[in-house]
Figure 1 (cartoon, one colour):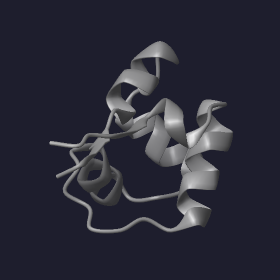
Figure 2 (cartoon, rainbow, N blue to C red):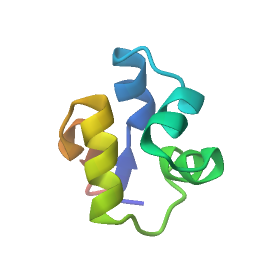
Figure 3 (cartoon, rainbow, N blue to C red):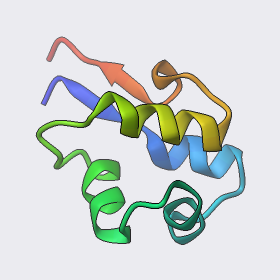
Length: 68
């Protein structure tokens, strides 16, 4: 998949667990896990906005495009 999700890297920089992020953004652990592992087929802009607010970052900080 050409979009790489580096959410775990951003969470590590913020010293935040997936459980803690799940609680702060108000999404289920299962849905965040699917996104974090790159298995999600789509994500809403509102979801990206919430994650960025909680992690104090930009989408480009944890989303990467790969030509391969």
